[in-house]
Image (cartoon, rainbow, N blue to C red; front, top):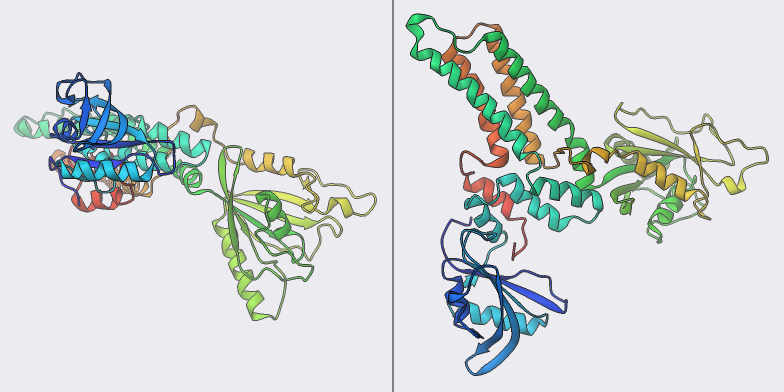
Length: 451
């Protein structure tokens, strides 16, 4: 894993193919390395911070490109080091030549995530904010962007630090009692102590409960499209995607496996699961498809129950149970071919997946089923599995500490029960102690080069 060395690192900071590209240079020798290939009115080493300089990148006497060089000085840069960003033309040849020259001048290619890990080690970002950088780059919807940018700006970091500070204060009071053990002095009122610990427990529970929404926004809200065979599930999927992704046939039981596709609706990513039709069958392959359908229902946040409006709800409709937190949308398809006098049941949505009728109403219902109002108002939402696991471990440790209070543990043992809560909360932000290399390696290996 990357270490806190002081090598000067270089990397492209923009994706290939654009008209303009940026090459980023960072490290103790960043300015000197750039001056070996950059020719402007003055050396960059003498330039003020936050200034932009026009010049040329030279390979000996050969002009590689006319560029702009932006200077950042330590500690006021992304990495906390001296840095230069070279803006050049977007030609892949020009970018590769600038990188080659910078490496020959004393730099080395950055590893994935090395700029951000340097920012973390320099105290510019905590660990949860650093993880949010990768999420921000990967965000493809408004909701995912809001989630990542809120976390990158501090999100729930400040809230977690507030909880840690409260717990540290509790342990300090408990340990202070040890210094006066012979005098039987109680600095931490046990009733007030319990109230504070229970309040911290409620705040941890609130953060943990937000993970279902956060993970769904980040990975996509799972929507299972279920119904009897030949009800139009694959046609609906194709209509939602505006392209032919699922095979459609008049033959019942065509879909034998779960087909998963994604679509952005109202700024939220949805993962649509087109499932096998549910019915009694002796076909072993079809039975396997139905078993996978039931599994898709179990892991979906939203279930779209599709009913043929020509037939209506009846005993042949599939039966399944939902968890309380799952949302069910009852949708009648083929309303254009429904019998005369057909009445849409209250709360149901009528569509024609083949013609596109009613799709706006269905998309609106899907979007309304995902409550992002709090997210857009800055409420902290947990989207990272590592954070959820740490919060869960902290909650379990807090529960043991509360049990210890009930058992009348002395101050020293009670303090020891609280310390794991502090440690687990600190694992999320990395504050108070640098995270182990194994954790850093796992996190930053997912980053792109240049970030």
